[in-house]
Length: 99
Image (cartoon, rainbow, N blue to C red; front, side):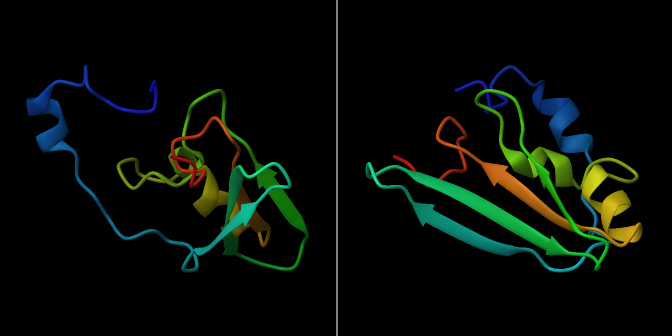
């Protein structure tokens, strides 16, 4: 899958610094569809301004919007702005819950 980082240099990967997100704890919901597949939603309940749904491109994990290897990610920015953030992993995502 394109979502894996097989071509990412190992030395560079070792230098990445992980940190704690400045966002609420995520709530994960895996939902079966009528035809037996699954989709997944991850919620960061940041505020009451209304829901924002983030869906990544083909074969990309929605968790990329909440990466902990950058100074500030999109999920953190939206939560700080008082939005209720939902990440959507559809059928083609490696994190959808499908085999």
